[in-house]
Image (cartoon, rainbow, N blue to C red; front, side, top):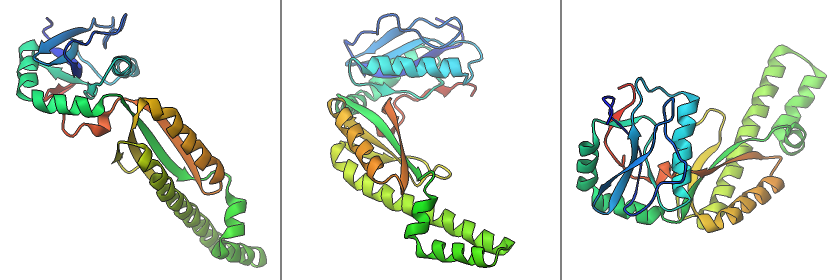
Length: 249
């Protein structure tokens, strides 16, 4: 046991095994171990001293979660969750065992895929051709160039691009929602018309991606779609799985 506490990566069903050769955060990387309590298990390691959100450790945390998810459902912890000792981990697992089991059952066989919709790049020609207001302002700039006219044209183009992306985002969300078990809106991202995560059956993830790609191909003048995943299912955990001290707290 370490004087720095116990770093907690995830909660998994009892009886699961650690991925071969998987290691945790720290330098050198900490060895992973299991803390069992009833029908659930926490994946932990010794917490390194002065843990910070360095890229190396962030990637190590993410890799543990992804490797675990290959074998079964995973209730992920956010980076930097540290408990005082294994006894505290067991006590909290025992107190929320029913909730953990229900969440693990819901996540079983699923992956999280995030989709962001942004204004289309290099779509000016389409905007001019299809947006009457933009076309009118552009002609006005050509007839009488000037600072204010250029500002109005730029604002009109930006507004049109954002509106078109938002409209396309609603359409793709409507198309993709039936392909997912659940959806979760993400935080607002500057310049992003849509940020949403989908809980998708792992066996259907290729179909989901193909559907996104077909939509992107046919709406390239309206929206740019960016997919990320598979990801740990953070967005579909209703409450923090394990109350623990955050790194640096």
